[in-house]
Image (cartoon, chains in turn purple, yellow):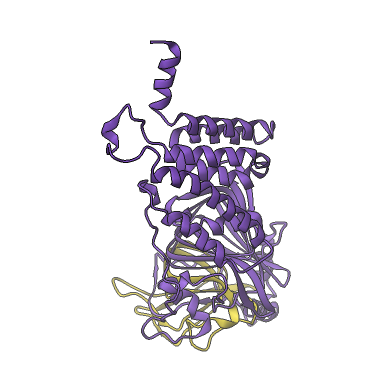
Length: 403
Length: 98
């Protein structure tokens, strides 16, 4: 047997051309940046080879935003075509056991291989237009179309379509006031009512930011931009839904209003069950790649396109910053929670506390208390408040002696 | 002029202290907390969990149906409640602190 024949045999035993194009895509994506994104490209190349066609296509599309516009389209297109070929590949006639003998050689999967890149490319282009157009319903159909393509690949099983027409039904005994609807919605179908719909909850106008060493988002789905009402008019925010959200590593939420900061720090925050997160900005590193999400930017448009796929993969980001957040969930576990009021940027909280408890505070207390009340920082609990291991430390209540 | 501390204590044995419609005015709080049905970042003027108690419009608010805090420590200025049940209450005074 000649070497050439052996090569041909090997070539037919695997999705050669699909793999070859994916390899080219990887090399191209890797060569273009040459510097900072080098590692990113290498990771992607390995992933291409390892996972195969469908993921190859998805990653190629992702490379559009992650790596110099998909290596100026060339790498992205190579990846899409190559991944599709890999996906559409069937063993050749040398191994007849894997295909019914009467089926024509170039059957439906070849068609799928041809249609898939076209649809992906068109949806990407539509996605680009959507950066200027806030009605994002069309792309949703596009991505669902792709998913509904007749295909034997297991990863292409029809994803659960959100029942978007179901209206919010407040739980029993809960009055359907606007401010509670976000929470009642979080447990019901209504949270799949997206983008165009007003969430019905009023957001604070205070400046708030959460930073965390890492964030793990399970079942994450970007629902598009939402017009969230505040006391000072509506604000455009991104809306995410998750089955759970875990923040770790120096979690710190800072709320600034009236020139005063309230800092909440935790060793970890676990949001569970029907997590709904609104934010005006979200940034961090995904697989080491810095990404920034703002309402309507290219990354969020892509996330919206892929929002029926993203829930399938848990996402872990590092060095996460979330701006102007509004979050609701069925449960929250806050470990080593500490809430401090009046800590300014210089970290003078110790001085401030001692100054208000110093002698003469009887006079100063009242305005201080008014300030606290104004800040809206009173704890509010209803029903069962279980406080275990309660301890009053420091100087809880102090009276000046009357003499 | 010297400061005198008043140290109330209650909640003996298996009978816990209880209160309803509790309002705690604190500038520092710590513990391990578990919330259910929580909303964070809501306009403080639109809070509904405690009837008749809300913050100023536009403020940063947070509310939950239930909260369990283990090892709570808080630095409070004011605590009020509709009803306080303080089994085994004792009051003591001290010049030296806790």
